[in-house]
Image 1 (spheres, rainbow, N blue to C red):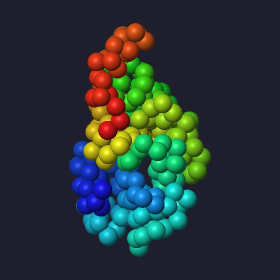
Image 2: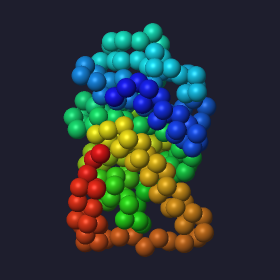
Image 3: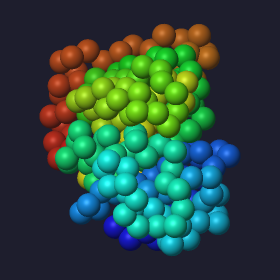
Length: 210
């Protein structure tokens, strides 16, 4: 994955309002670790040379800037999920709002299955940039491809950067729809286990990690 592709994806998500105030971060797996966006640099000003390659233990392999403060989150996911080729972490508004209630997104819509299970779970709370947050994120992602991060934002993984980015966008869409229902005073009718089983069967390869 070219650094230019990571920057293009970050700028596209930023334009959607998913990365306010230089928040959020993206990475792609490399043979020796991952290539990650730098800390504190607006995406509009980021060039390929600004990205940082780090080993899974956090050691700098290439680059002249500091890696994102959430490098531990990214490397922990790669260590725990060998199928993951890219990680997208956003502060998208509706997913972040729901994360501040520390509630999962339940199976009110069949597209929840894109996250890999019956809900989009919410992690336990931990301070940003810490090993504790990385551990909580990996735990929340068990059996899932996306999760909310308590009082923080959302994270999605994929075999490809395009897949992780698309899933991050769908998580935000689901959060927006769910909060709209709640705001209207409506109680969504949740899909049951049998209905979700049919959804996964209908998705087939479509529902697999991309």
